[in-house]
Image (cartoon, rainbow, N blue to C red):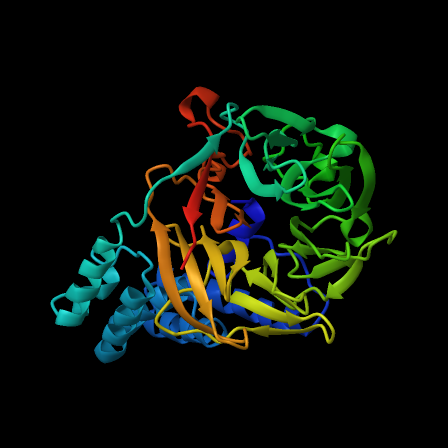
Amino acid sequence: MSPTRLACLLACLTFLSLPALPSAAETRLERVQALYQQAVEAYGKKDFPAYYEKISGVAELLPDDPGVVFRLAGASALTGRAADAERLVKRLAAMQVYRDLAGSPDFAAIREGEAFRSAAAAMEALKSQVGTETVAFRLPERDFVPEAVAWDPATKSFLVSSVHRRKVVRVGRDGAVKELVSEGRDGLWSALGIAVDAKRRVLWVCSTAHPQTRGARPEDLGKAALFAFHADSGKLLGRYPLDGGATGHSCDSVAVSSRGDAYVSDGNTGAVYRLRRGGKALETFLAAGTLISAQSLAFAPGEKVLFVADYAQGVFRVDLASRKAVLLPAPKDASFAGIDGLAFYKGALIAVQNGIEPNRVARLRLSPGLDRIEGLEVLARNLPVYDGPGLATVVDDTLYYVGNSHWGRFDDKGNLPDAATLSEPAILKIPLGL
């Protein structure tokens, strides 16, 4: 999980250094940030009426965020709103997102009620495993920190990007691992989202300089660019900085259309960029602030619609002709926060949710018009190998995704523990046939 995505989810809850955004969305983000900070301060002073007032304001702006729902439930219990608190803990249980209800002192007033006991039991049940851990292949470098996996149909091989070692490797049908883009080649920073244009033999790599990027220069931190390499030789074909090379950005994911246009998400600003085939520079496709934290991108069949995961809010449906972005309506009894990986498969979106606990892979069933999420089916949850599952791709009827990125093992200075303490990175697979 990239620090950008984690920071963005926490941005709704702890607000770690979001960049300034030039649009009406800035007012909304700043309002959420201010209300949350005021809520935390009031809670620290045990001024629970003020805490309830401020966190209610956050909930009006982010009504479906499970962390906000949890805090609002606690604030309700602390201020004598027992019925509201019980309703909210029931909703938390329905969302299938773990929170330590039993360990929180905020719920003392409703702890003996049936609603609370039932919700707490449901939370504990979420610790059970769903699905089977099936490893497609492993990588030998334990400190690789994989971010994304992509399929190259021309060579029948997988490509995997490295955050820490800032490179891309190819994994052949025999399981052999070979470097395609060597560490730091041509100024590559952390290699994040990747995509293969098999027809034109281009490997697109999103890259950002993070504290977790081995050897990153302090002056580069927060800079991001889309790189194009030859998919066979690894030769650099082009480098396209986000916002002219300014700091405060993160090139997180990339999707390439059949006509060769590349679309890029910026997890820091919520913008989406486009590089037209043969273009010389990225153009803004969705302005900063359109989303809170834009993550994985997935085309619908026909490529008239692009789905974009927003780590804080859910999934947006973007009409490519009009550039209109709409948050997909979704059931209120499920959580769609924390989606990192996203892929389209037969009328559904397959989502890797590493921004909620427990981490899971879910099938989001769409309406026939692809304009609404009608249901959520958990395909995998709490697998033993999980340590920050990451981006995904679909090959035929199988999902392949990063199972253990080890993002959470970095310390606050961007250092990893001894590699011997880490497990070998695993790419997992799940059959998707209906």
